[in-house]
Length: 291
Ligand code: PPS
Image 1: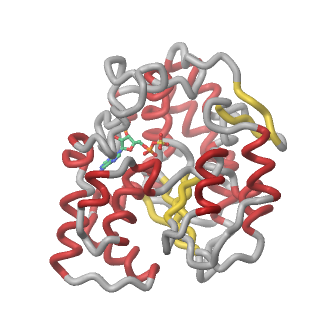
Image 2: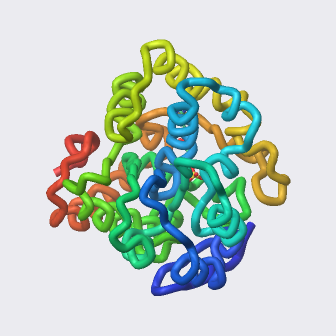
Image 3: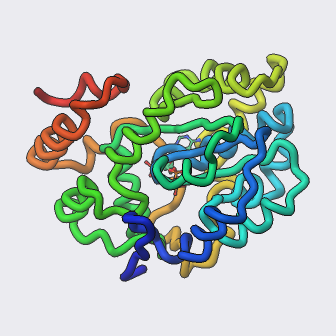
């Protein structure tokens, strides 16, 4: 378990993943390309799911790439130094690139690039529960302690990559731009096929029905849970210990109901309402937030 985060530009980051050098490389040397595709998320919001979907779309539904190359090589995290250095050398086209960075930092380097960005967002209650178990099993986060103390921290800016609210509201400012699309985890669950078709349209990629079927089948929770190239079991247990909690844990909507007490839920709703009052975008979970 990591006992320290590193601070950069006012944000905390897990020091196993992000360093001052990696952020300086991103700011000064990383070359954004207009045909890149960026998969951006707040942690535990559907990052790896979107990597599977985008990898399959890129290969017209052929699952060979997904089944033979780890996800962190197919769509590397831009905030990791070695990954960003390799990306600069890469001849892949389009490059699929992942990031958990807040918009405020990402945009300093991205500037006016025409590259496409898909921002996947999930009910913060489910993201919090997912992150709680991830913090138990991975070296990237501090020991979460009790759910009560973890939630208090989750609802502040003292989280790696900033607070969920800051992250989401920052990225939502991109709404309406031609090169930006936001996708909810909940819609992926509700209608994966329809979501895949929308993503293809946004990317200007035409897939026939058989190819779309293959994207849907190969990016299902059960398929990804079995796929070593998608489930992180190739990483050393020092980084992720799946005995404590698997990375591909439950993959459902609404698991917060199994984890929060009534008081924790009320507290969450109170902070959510106050933090999101200045956000005009409506999300599928908004109706469940108590008045
Ligand atoms: S990370 O560490 O930020 O990259 O994690 P991330 O991939 O964003 O989130 C992990 C959660 O996403 C779930 N997941 C899926 N759910 C449904 N279907 C598919 N195909 C899928 N792939 C990943 C994963 O199980 C984690 O959620 P929880 O709630 O913990 O199960």
